[in-house]
Amino acid sequence: MPIITLLTDFGTGAEYAGLMKGVILSINPSAAIVDISHQIDSQDIVQAAFTIYSSYEYFPDGTVHLVVVDPGVGSERSLLALEMKKQFFIAPDNGVLTLLFNEEKITSLIRLTNPKYFLVSVSRTFHGRDIIAPVGAHLSGGIDVKKLGTEIDLRDAVHLDHLYARISENGELVGKIVAIDDFGNLITNIDSKKLSEVYPTGQEKKIKIKIGSHVITGLSETYGSVRSKTPLALIGSRGYLEIAVNKGNAALFLNAGKGDNVRVQTS
Image (cartoon, rainbow, N blue to C red; front, side, top):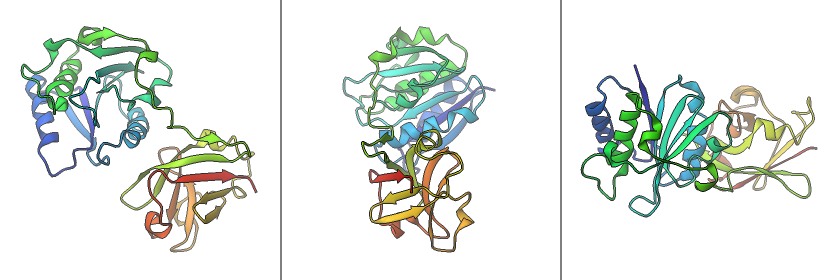
């Protein structure tokens, strides 16, 4: 059974996600559709980029991922089909696939130009329904991805250059909050590998994590490793540094939001 995932900023109140599913099932009734999320913050390409990057590896070979976070819909931006690690990704060419571009085992990158696989009537404001959904459905049915359009080089696609944490001149690891989950946990763009460049093995309890005027010392192993209502830092399930409050909301407790800097240094 072919699997198609949806990742959008549609929310759950409007009909948009349902219409995409209708188009998919009209073309490939055997498709199994999985909602990764429809709660990406409106037009937040960065949040979507980290979400698809941290999600895809939990799906089997042949999965088709549809990403519709598309503030440029109706403009001259194009749409892409990426084949990587025996999975497929259909998304706007707006940088949302940047983190995937740096992975190994990329087979091909196609700019969608073949209207044979679009709906007959294409709206300028709903390419998710009229292009991305039907292309994904056809792809899940087994068509060759190269039939969808023109193959391009990775360098010709849009890349976001501000997604990665960096090491400053004074040796601090500087990252940003890229998402806040429903628990109020602050998810950063500092991954565990980058974090290990800052502190030696075995020094996890001595590093300092700074956000605003707050300083958290050491990494915890679980959310319950500290007292109730106490801030903590840990490597979350995505493999990225998170800041949380045990039995509390870190975003409110620390008065923090997306885009805020997070700094890590050794003691």
